[in-house]
Every structure is written in structure tokens, then in C-alpha cells.
Length: 199
Image (cartoon, rainbow, N blue to C red; front, side, top):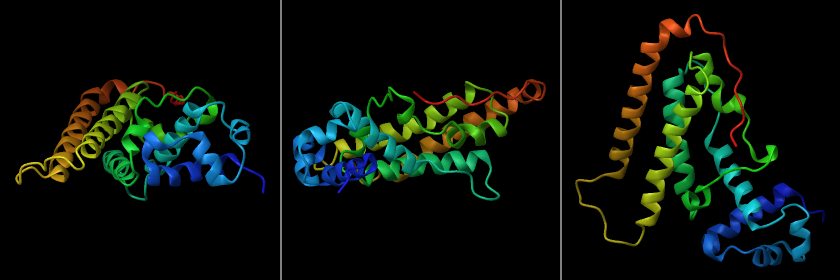
């Protein structure tokens, strides 16, 4: 059986569910795939490169195009919710994503998928980048705290993490709406910018 890069990533994500990020090693992964260690290094130079690709897979799972009739604010809100859900759905998902900085073009997400809805709504670059980072890093930080608190003293009954997350997300979106409204006259005369890849 020929070992494909995508196959390695899928196996690594499955192994993550069993052993967690601390227990994920290239040796253990090679055993799961039934190959020798050097076979993995044909696709990934080191463990960090593999982790980066796993993180990219989670981000790709969380990001998606706009739905018919959806505006940028609803799309960006859905993106934040999907990212939090994706990270919480995978053991150590938030830790996996922490510090994700793709070092090659292969690891970067398609900018047309990430930024196009914001640019078409009138966000200039780099505002589209900062808007996306504001939402996704909020969702990431929230998920990180939730996963770190698993097994510890439960929060007070009045603190519902879902309510708190929605409050914070709605506040960010409201701020972005206000920013777009303030900049609308200038945006009307500014040329559209092409999105650039993350990383």
C-alpha cells in the first residue's frame, strides 16, 4: 500500500483521539500505519511539520464558503462557531492549533475561501485579515480554556460557556459592523485588493 500524505494526516488525527498530543509520536504513528519510521519522513521532515499539517486540516474543517443568501457577518459568526466546535470535537484540538505558522505554501489555506466574503463586503486588506484573526483567535482561546478545564472544578452554575462565547462573538461582530459602516465612504472609492495567503 502506497503511503499518501493525506493518509498520514488522517491516521495522526485518529491517533490523537487515543493518546492525546503528548502521546503522539512519529514512532507510534508509524506502528499504526504499519510502516517504518523513515516512510513518514518522506512526507514530513519532522513532527512539527506533521502537527502543522494536522492543524491545517482542522482549520480547513472549520472554514467554508458563504451559503446562499448569507451576509459576511452571518458567515463570519458561523466560522467562529465552527472553529470552536471543531477544536472541541478533537482531543487537544486547541493545543494542536496553538502556534500554527505554516512554513510552506502547501500548509496555507486558500485565501479565496478565507477572505473573499470579507473583501467582497468591502473590507480592504489587511482589515479582512485582522477581522478573521479577531474571530478565529477568540474562538481558539475560548476552546483552549474549555479543554484545559476538563476534569477540574466545574464553573459556577450561572456561567454557561456557550452563552459567554456567543456574547463575545456577537460583540466582535458588532464592532466589525461599526468599523465597516464608518469606513464605507472611503471604501467606495478604494480599488479592491487581492487576498494573500495566511502564513
